[in-house]
Image (cartoon, rainbow, N blue to C red):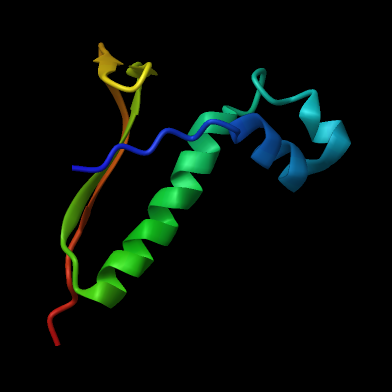
Length: 87
């Protein structure tokens, strides 16, 4: 199992939407959710190319604590099953 924590979502969104959009981050735009959505799309494409079937879940809530703990609860924000296209 892999856990990927995006630690610079605000900075990524700031680069993408510019200075004016920076004011919208956190009010209208959920930076973490938007970056995760883009990552899920990229991961789905890469997994399909490698022949990997997976379940990718974007959740809101858990936080990494130090190097050995994960805090919960989990609120599922998005989910996608990656399946291979049968030819």
